[in-house]
Image 1 (tube, rainbow, N blue to C red):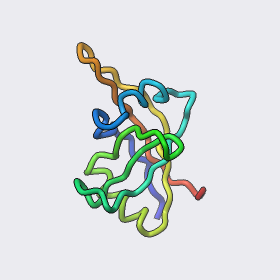
Image 2: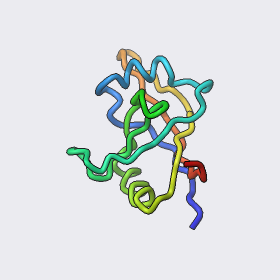
Image 3: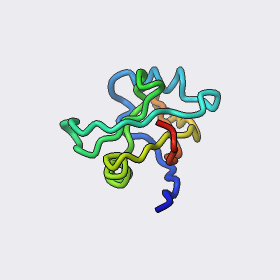
Image 4: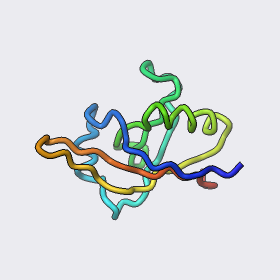
Amino acid sequence: MMFKPIETKLAGVSFDDCQANIRKWGCADIGTFAIDREPDNPHDPNAVCVSLFRIHKMGYLPKSVSQRIAPLMDQGRTFIAEFVCRNEYAPYDRVGLTVRIVETTEE
């Protein structure tokens, strides 16, 4: 079954180094981000982390999206997150990231 791309804002962007990472690498020049399952995540068994090179965490897929993606990933299907835009929240000093989740044939 063909996967229809999902555009979504990342969740959990205020934790760990996500704010600094989004400021530094949340741009069109980067292009795509890795997405990885975190089945042992204590907060969400369907957790899917979005990162740059699997090193720099950008955030997580929201639960509504990870509930759809996680079972597919568990079946061996692979996905990437394409950059859509960086979200700036004035007057707050916080940034977020909007990505498009697409299926890929790459490992």
